[in-house]
Length: 189
Image (cartoon, rainbow, N blue to C red; front, side, top):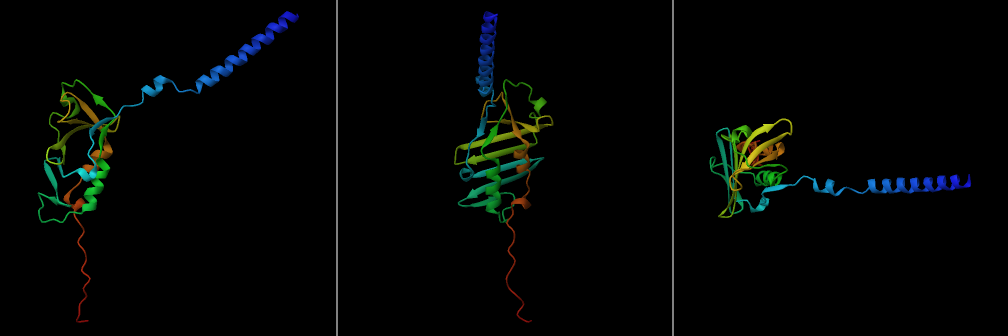
């Protein structure tokens, strides 16, 4: 009987140690979990203040912005006063351009809406740096758009968050400086 009690106490002690070890190990993150964190792909790493040109083409309409010294000018609306803060804010919202997904070895770009994309963005920085992003179909399941970058691997498609595309859905009215109201009053009163 004494021998059975000893065996029972030893088995109970082993069970308690095993349970404590299991509990402690379950709190340590798996290496596999860390390695499956989504990789991010940099499509363009320009800083907002480095950009010297921005061309947005959407549904056949083009908006070309060029930096002339410290001022932004619109090629299509040459007499329009561009609000510098609006352009800076736009660039800060879209840069740097990154993607969480990359689809490699693509042969049929039509399935992503990239065979004849209606939305294109060109970013320029300096004389020789540029990036052209063609944006294709919207994926309702992931809430992302498909895109390709012409300066990168020609057989890869990336995804862009819908916030990137909606930020670029602008018109000249969105970036035009508000006219200042004159502070003069009628002297005849």
